[in-house]
Image (tube, rainbow, N blue to C red; front, side):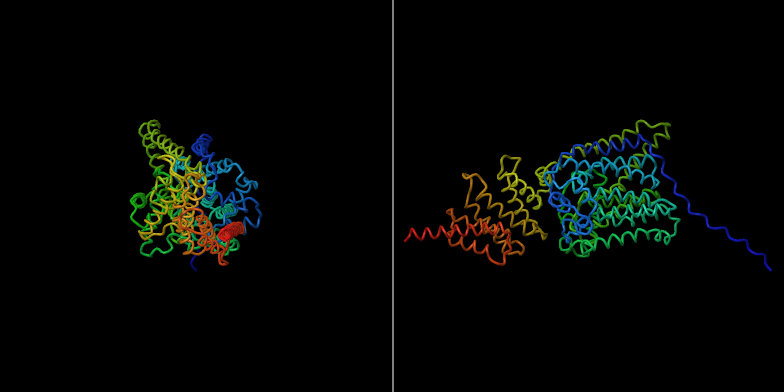
Length: 587
């Protein structure tokens, strides 16, 4: 008989991932200062734009309940596809039911503190990605001061980005531990759930984790790497079930998406240019913009193409550098939900760059760290080479401090955006709305246009955009712009500057738009009501035309709020009394 074979030794356990080096108190303090100081002048900003529907006027914030937080969509509008319990809960804790009376600085301070915490987690994650200590710290420092984060941090509703990034990066940090212990799995699953309950874009984080693990640990079989994602798949399934229970759907309505009708052959260019614009803005400090038109990414865009080419070139040139390649591959994966692979309601938004920017910023950080290492090897110390990272951080912090005040007030925000993109009608409309709200009716000087001029510019830009084959202002904004121009000329200017002759064509256009489109009952009725007032001016609107307009406003098919309906009925009664009095005088 052949001799018995000795038993095979048990397989060796997987190598333990080396723990990141211990955090130096000085390095921690420096990162905290870099994250906090450039944003201190952002604490004075007002409530702006989406802050009103999502925070100030949101009953889920002002009168929170557990059901409202977790089992209802944000602002109770499922078509928006937003289910964000954790940001809403944080707003509720700070608002305390005070609505617009709540001071804004605690909300802004909360955002800045979240940014500081995220910076520290980002630093530890980069160390776990095997970046050199110098590169990891410099990337976290660049992340702390970079002006591409101004929108996410300075805008109160940007908190969803901050919470998703904080919990999401912590999930990646714990999920990359090897070998995993049961408590690591539980903690990572909890962090992933918290990220997903903060913002929908965090759902892709398990894919990011898979990309990082496959790139940094190629020796792990693909099957084993996929099996390691099962806990996150189970967590995602629970998140999606909760989302469906709250909204009745998984995704926002495609009907609201700007790229919903884009041809299939145009989509690859769209995706590449969106990725390129995000990469460019993650690296190069660029003036903040709140709105990007759909045409910017379906036509050739030099900046976006340069950014996309830079990302591709870096990926090819650094294919032998595992950490940088992992970061470059992770960058587009973190953006999957906002690249309009499935059309969404946003064209491009700089706040979406908050978490992904960390992976892009590792690239310049590695370059700066290489300068430090070259000097250390050459002279045995680091001295003059510190000038490059110091100057870079100072420059980025200076841009951030300079651009923070854009978010101080609505007028400043929209004035800035109109100056950057004067060809876009939506920006002129928003600027006009707030000029109107502040009683700035007409141009007061060469630098300050009035609401009338901005409404007129919005409508003119709308015509030019439509002539190019793109969507312009939605019908409700068209109707409101014409209605606002008419009401300012007719009722709101000082009496000596009012003009029924200028009000009439604007109100007629508002009526035309209101009759042409559905769901404009309120705009149409207001335009008809104001049109009836033209009977007091010598512009060819007699009492018969005025009565016809008022009776049209009271037609049963128009659904009006009670207050507006009462105003129309009151004006009709007054008109009938005027007619009766005039008839009596004739007799």
